[in-house]
Length: 140
Length: 111
Ligand SMILES: Nc1ncnc2c1ncn2[C@@H]1O[C@H](COP(=O)(O)OP(=O)(O)OP(=O)(O)O)[C@@H](O)[C@H]1O
Ligand SMILES: [Mg+2]
Image (cartoon, rainbow over all chains, first blue to last red; front, top):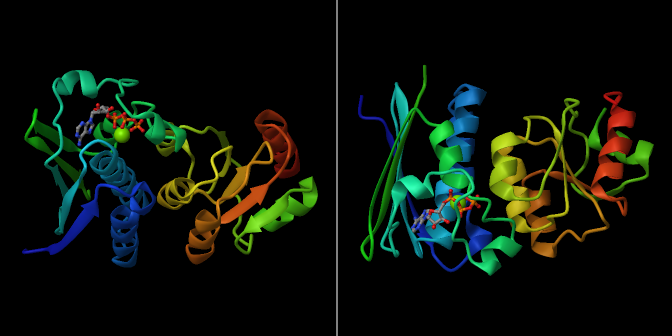
């Protein structure tokens, strides 16, 4: 099965637009008749990733693949990278700026939420090069 | 009970949306969006002081039935426009978060 493929460009300078890609995927999955629990998991994981792209990664791209078994989300940026990924994965760890915090971000719960709501998640990050996050939510 | 009925019962202002969605009975209070993302119950009432565009996105993505803006916090104009478009109900009250949630709990019979 070749599946459905969606591509999004996420601008890095506009937090107000963050959520458009995850919102679009959410309504697509809903229309396709996916289980509401699966839809919610994908929506939460993708929104957190999308916000991180914007507030930490300087913007980037998201590719979503939907097939009969799973939803795969790949988020990639060419931002500063993450020096210590296991530290970043800890609940409460955050380097969010004051402006991001004033909008309600910076609890340090984004990556842990992504982990919790997906069946597989890998973070490949190189300082000075960028970050690639791959997440899989299984349908069954 | 719908959002509109809750507004009438508690004297909350209907600031956005039709308010005709049914509330499931669960109430969640919080402001840091990724904590809310992890905890807000589907079909629930979310009590917060954050009235910006990102709050609307979080409500949509978590299937929150209704946002209750406490402490008389304003709903940003762009957030209101997006909320209308995405059919998100937002209520407002001058009450602090705890009192707002208590009033809602009483009205919803989940006190
Ligand atoms: N794409 C990225 N590029 C660079 N750094 C990142 C990226 N994603 C996450 N980080 C780093 O990992 C930390 C933890 O991320 P996480 O999403 O868990 O929390 P947060 O974004 O700081 O706050 P929250 O998500 O709770 O609003 C961030 O503060 C940042 O230092
Ligand atoms: Mg984050």
